Length: 167
Length: 167
DNA sequence: GGCAACATTGACGTTCACGTCAATGTGTTA
DNA sequence: TAACACATTGACGTGAACGTCAATGTTGCC
Image 1: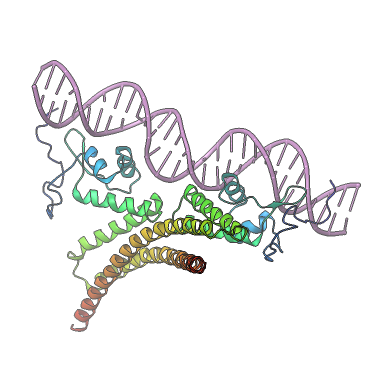
Image 2: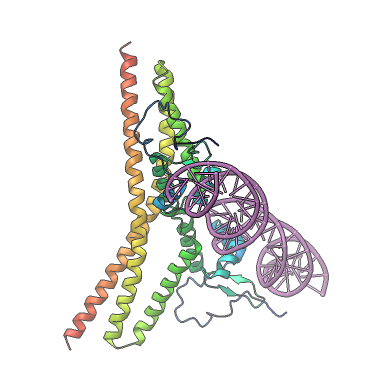
């Protein structure tokens, strides 16, 4: 009821202005860029896999470039790797935890506290890595199997060609 | 109403008796071995991702070792690689096509026909391989990223330890 | 041949990941 | 400031992948 420029509400006094926050985009744009639907964007926010973007005074969502990157990561985790949104949410939560730790890092001077945080971060990362490694192992097995089959097919083909030439 | 031994109906005159068909198992057993539920086994059969197993005269399902292996493949495709049952069904259909081609292989004497079949089989396999490669690439990227993070964490840890020793 | 244990087929219920529609408010442009 | 495109929040609908329950039939064993 009194808006002129589409200026985001918070982050105007953002601590680090990584020029990600320079260009905000509305939901339609982001949907088009990511290949997701508007409904999906709202849903991801609703269930907590995407942190709520900023809003205009009127309540329109304004997505940052960082948000778009996160959405693309989510999309890959889902489509390419078959993670459920629940799993993705776990990963995202872990990332946020890590982020908070990084923020607090410079605040805290106690090296023992810092070591504990490092260990926590390390553990989270190793857990994620393990998930990835498991899937990698399975895929490698399939790859090997399929390549072996291709080789066998090629051998058969060679036999056939030889047979044909001999006649 | 007149059954004595749990002898499967068909495949008793099976063309090749690969001693897979030697030990048939009932649904409970198979469920326990595969970690799937009985409902899931029936469902997979219903939607066509698993070819219907043989039955006793009374109608009990009897799964072969080959069936169990197929179920384990399906499970991996789903849980590890995130394929949908629709995708898995496509892959299974392709496999069956390949199987039929193999059966017909010895029947047909025309080398040109055989070459055409080889090409078809080759194409199916390459398609499957491509799906796998795509997922592999995505996972490798994630792996690299996570390993780099672990390295950075280790570097920070080393710094901290040094600091502590100096005091 | 009788009985407990396990199987079968419906049929309906549930969760996830959205799709779709309606009622209403916002942003931009003429 | 009127108009029109685009946004918002409910709310209900949907397809996939099963879970669960009921009614009934089968198998193995004594």
